[in-house]
Amino acid sequence: MRRYITNRAVDALLTVWLVLTLVFFAMRVLPGDPAVAALGDQASSDQLEAFRALMGLNDPLPLQYVHFLWDMLRLDFGTSFRTGDRIGALLAGALPYTLQLAFAAMLVGAAIGIPAGVVAATNRGRSADYIARLLSLLGLCIPEFYLGALLLIVFALRLDLFPIMGGGAGFLDRLNHLVLPAVTLGIVMAAFTARLTRSSLLEVLRRDYIRTARARGAPERVVVWRHALRNALIPVVTGFGIYILTMLSGSISIELVFARPGLGTVLVSGILARDYPVVQAGLVVFALCVVVVNLTMDVLYALIDPRIRVEAL
Image 1 (cartoon, rainbow, N blue to C red):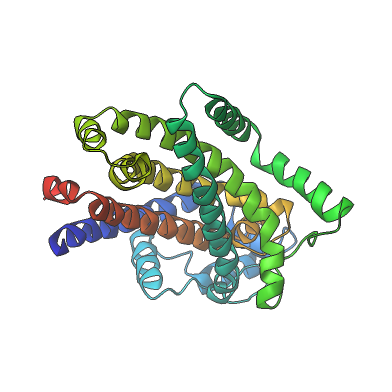
Image 2: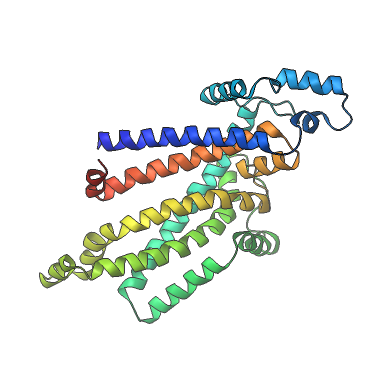
C-alpha cells in the first residue's frame, strides 16, 4: 500500500509541475500588458517601465519561470495589482468557503444518490425504479445556476428561510448560508450518483457469488448492502472523483449566484479587473485542488479493492 501511495504521489507532483508550467506560459501569451492593466491607460511610459522592472516583467522568460516556480513552492503568490493586498491572504480567506461548499455538496450527493441508486437497482422495473430514474434525469437536465436561482427565489426571497447572499460569520451562520448552495450542487451530483450506482449495482447483482450468497439463504439486505454494494462502489467512486472535479468548476457559478466569497468569486473578479497575479494564483490553487482530489480518489480505489493497487505496481 505504501509503494502504491508513493507512486501516486510522484505522479501528483509531476502533474503539479506541468500545471504550474502551463499556467505560467498561458498567462504570458494572453493579449494585453499587465503594467497597463495595473496602472491604467493614463499611466506614463516611465511609470509603466518602473512597474515592469519592479514586478520582474523585464527579466528573461526563463528567469521569470524559475522565480515563479520558487514563489509557488513557497506559496508566495505576490500582491494584487488592483488592491496591493497579499494574494496568499486573499486566497486563504476564500478557499475555506469553496472547500466547505464542495464537501457539503459531496455529502448531499452521496447521502441522496447512493441510497436512491440502490433502491432503483433492487426494484428494477417497478415504480420506485421509474421514479428514481425520472428524478435523476430531471436533476441532470437542470443547469446548476438556474436551480440555484430557483432555490434562492423560493426559499430565501419568498419563504425567508435562508440568507440571500454571503458566506456567514460564525459557525451556525456559515451553515445557514451553506444550505442552499450545497443543496444546489448536491442535487445535481445526487442525480449523477444515483444513475451510476444503479447501473453498477445491477451488473454486480448478476455475478455468481451473489447467486451463491442468495442460495445459502443470506437475507437480501445482507446480500445487497454487504456483498454487492462494496464492489459496485468502485465505478461509483471513480465517477464521484470525476464529478467532484466538475463540481469545483461548477462552484464558480454557484458562488456568483449566492454571492459567496469563495475562490470562484475571487477568480472572476480578478479576470474582470485584469488582475494578472490574482488570476494566475487562483488557477494554480484550483489546479492543486484537482490534483489532491485525484490523489484521494486513487487511494480510495485501493482501499475499496486491493486488486487495484496490486495491478498498478
